[in-house]
Image (cartoon, rainbow, N blue to C red):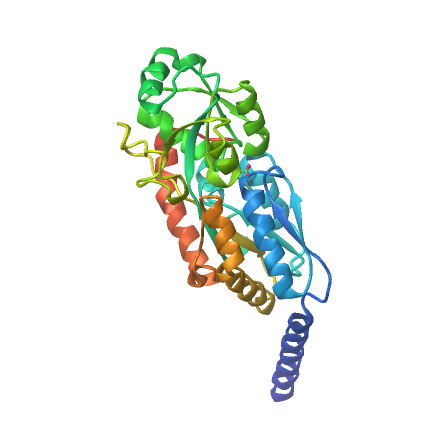
Length: 326
Ligand code: ASP
C-alpha cells in the first residue's frame, strides 16, 4: 500500500517536472498563433497586431495573427477551444465572448469552462458613423430621418455577437426602431462599403475608424458611451444629443485552450502585463481612441471575474431584445 502510494507520488512529481520543464523552454523559439475571430485590418485585428508584436519581443518569439472571421467571432473562438493546448495557439477576442452565450443557441462552448484566461488587453470605445451620402449631417437630424425612413436604412455589423451588433441592438432599442442589418466578417470590409455608400450606418470601434473620422471621410454622429471619447472630444455622446441609455465599452482579452499548462498561461500573462504597460502600446492605443488596461487587469483571475460579470450584465439585455442565432 505504502509503495503504491510512493510510486503514485513519484509519477506525479515526474509529471509536474515535465510540465515545469516544458514551461521553462516555452515558447522555445516556435511561433505562437493568435487567432483573431474577425477580418484583417479591422478594429480587433489592430489591437491584436500591436499587442502581439510587443508580447513576441517579451517572449522571444513571433506571434502570428490568424484572422478567422465569421459569425460574430464565434467561429474563430471555437477554433481555439478545439486547438491543441500547448501554448502555441491563443485567442484575442472582445466583449463578444460574453454576449455569445446568450445570443447563440448552439455556441458549442462555455467561455468560463472551455478556455484558460490569460488577461485583458484594452478598452475600445464606439462611435455611430454614417456614409457621407446620407442626408442628415448631424445626430439631431439623423433621429427624425431614421423615424421617417427606418425600414429602408441599413446598419452594417460584423455578425451576431460582434461589438457593432451589440451597439446596433442598443441603438435600435433606444430608437424603438428596427433597421435593416447587414452582416460582414468584420467591420474592416463593412467600412469600405460605408465609405462607398453601399450601406448607410454603422456603430464601430475607434481603432478601425480613427483615420476616416479625422479626415472626415465618413460622418461621425455620436459617441456611444456615457462621456465623450478623449481622442474625439468634438463628437458629442448620443445622450448629450437626446438619446440616453447607450453605453458600450469594447474590452479585449486573451485566452488559451482549456488545459494549457498553468506555467505557460502564467508566462503568457506576464508577457501581456509587460506589454500593456509598454509606453509604445499605450501611446498607440491612445492615438486610436482606445485605452490599454492597467497590468492588474491583464491577469487570469481578473479576466475570469470580468467575463463572468459581463455574461451576467449582457445576457438579460440580449434576452429582452429577443435576438438569437443557431
Ligand atoms: N471586432 C470586429 C472586427 O474586428 C468588429 C465588431 O466586433 O464589431 O471587425
